[in-house]
Image (cartoon, rainbow, N blue to C red; front, side):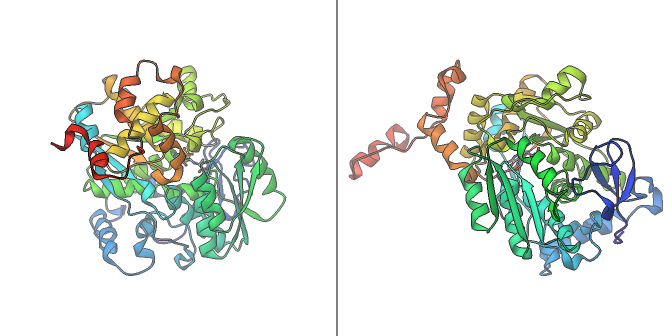
Length: 451
Ligand code: F0G
């Protein structure tokens, strides 16, 4: 299974092309839809034609104790399932992946579900899940001889791309919506040496513009329309399966923005299933912010078959996206796995984020939609007490410290957003206090809980 025999298959019309023949915007020349990496024959393997599941599982686990560069990456240790490079020596890695899976005891108790876990992709080198996709697609850019790479971003893609481009010695161009990304992410792009343009438009406008730019100059596009990004981003599915000893959890809950990540995770589980490495798929549910919910609307109006773009508004800036590129792929994943697509309010996001913080983990606002969505699914009776749930936390809490501080100071949410939730929100807030510099004054802040 090591040969690079991949091809690209159009998700819309099914046309197949060689990887090297993709257009710079990664859109199908026939129908305009996106491509998916396909490994011919994988889904037809039966019986002894299938890979030796036990041997592969052993090999992947064994590599965790290897000192070899590729083995130390949580993406490339699964390289048998992403043979996208002619030469694995071209892989650019920051030792991404191998992220922790945490049990969430407080959420489990509050929801009456024994097994709620968080797969924390914010524990990647640049602090978000984008690193797993970036190691894959940027390595392809390097192997194909590009000198420049570029992305439009709500912040995390640009941080990841800038880091990997710097490691590879490539130049990179970042287009971000002016004033609508978290400072931590912008700081990373600067730190890693990107050329950063803040444009007076939103994320969708940045991506449209970049699509034109890459057709005019030899610049490799690294947004998740690039199908190689999704090959890296499918590997957390392998890690989750491995962490449960290949007994798949019942539910995986993922935030939805441009919808590449949910598509990638669905592909990862599907391939494990096709290759006989797991017995079933988890239900994959996608949660959006209520102010940036085009996929939710699409499911309500047409069961995920037609998507009307929306003008996106949410403080979870990472998922402030109104016209998601990979919506068809994500809709297919939800439908095929029997998952759900729903949205959550700004107050629900803020409270869920504080609760994940109180578990000692923390995450950025966009990641917290997963817990907010789980609460809704549980309340609707869609998830049972004995089921196992994994929340995919996409970004580190330090990415957007302003949001956290505003929440705890009580300046984040407007009064009408808090209606009916005031007491619950107050119980979650932990504002810093200005206190006299005496032991008595400091001890007094601890109140009765000290006794
Ligand atoms: N969570 C975080 C922290 C993100 O940064 C993003 C997307 C998502 C969730 C949504 O993932 O787009 O695959 O559905 N951030 C992109 C960026 C758009 O530019 O960093 P998706």
